[in-house]
Image (cartoon, rainbow, N blue to C red; front, side, top):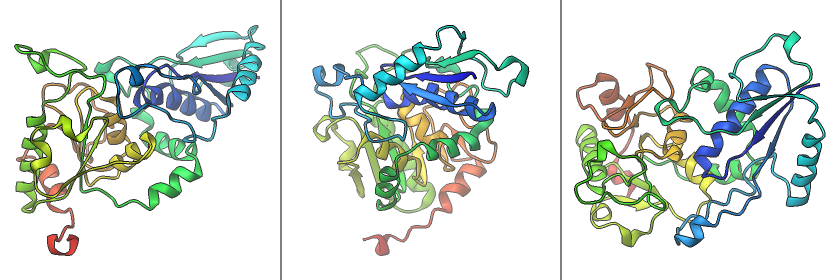
Length: 303
């Protein structure tokens, strides 16, 4: 009997979801069991950087166990050391004749130029498997929260600000300029013809923003675990991503809403569905404009 193993990297939630969902889809396609390890590690970086989010994801997924039970799981996997090790296999259905006696291991995060390769082709299946692996408590909490209109993700934390003289389109893992978000929100509202409410999802603190929270009808999502914020962002009527943040990109991938990406950092499509808008804000694109204008919102009723 072969086994699929996901060894979660020591990374944030977005980066962990890549090997987790590849392992889940691969196991589903080949009718195999998947085991997950690496979810009980303490991440020191967020504490040293005094980040708001400490990147703790306990009680999020059904496979999570306590430290002792996870170690027992690792020993069981180690006991299959005589199996043929196959690292990062393609996420496809394999002939049954090649399956026996294998240990299929997923642990890597993909290259930024094509983050959802191997998952894009199984978009609907990924969403289903992701939902199935969530704890029921997460689902219940999510259902009690109001769906955002414009969901904006602003990555702060370990993403430093642009240095003087740096060109944003030539650097990675930098904070998306605050002025960019203000401009995008303003233009979306102009297309809709109203001050659509904005919910900001961020790992930063309000005092770190100079102008964004001066906008009308804007609030910060606070008090939720990271998994809830990701899911709630994915339910927004329109999503504005933070450049380079896989947290943003996963929220968009799980969504049916238009996803706005920074024009200087667009690579391979995430969802690959021509009926779902994904790209820079283009106020002349019929699909995007219609999607925005069809958002039901009555300002007086909202108040």
